[in-house]
Image: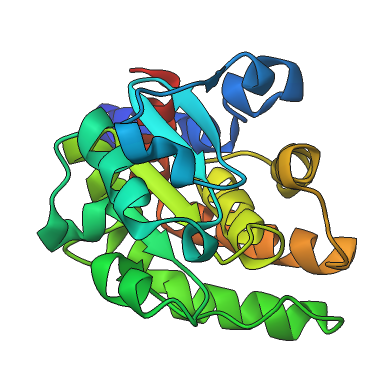
Length: 224
């Protein structure tokens, strides 16, 4: 019995340690090598400020969903995955004022990240809590079923990149690396650095509280 308890304890400690190891793709030099030009439909040129990354089998894109042609955004999903309209094309729209995008995609309005870092981080964590891995259609379910995930606000300057960093941090990237990555591709655009870091930190903490989901997401991003 004592031996069994020792083995179970060792497995638990080993799993916890694995969850704390930052995945290799989080390193900026490694992440840069994952950027790709995905297959595009004829209307694909209607997508603005898009950057796409092939992390494992998953195509992970950030783009200006609200200022892009909704048809182009949805066709990017259908050309590169088998995600469906009933799943919002595995695309999340995190701003407002584009009524077609609000209906066609998974819509969650978020405020502009502001000077109050903790207030912004708390809002983002509460609004997106179930979107990570709890809802029937979630970031994780789209990665598992369709190997596709897209995120964006209107001009992909403030909200969208901040959520992109949250997702990377949920998967195990340090908030510092996640923020450095999104700032490189989309810029801060007036978002206080401390605020974007606080938002990413919430994603990291959420992933730490859900180690099974973190391990699944990091494994999918790593191609395991």
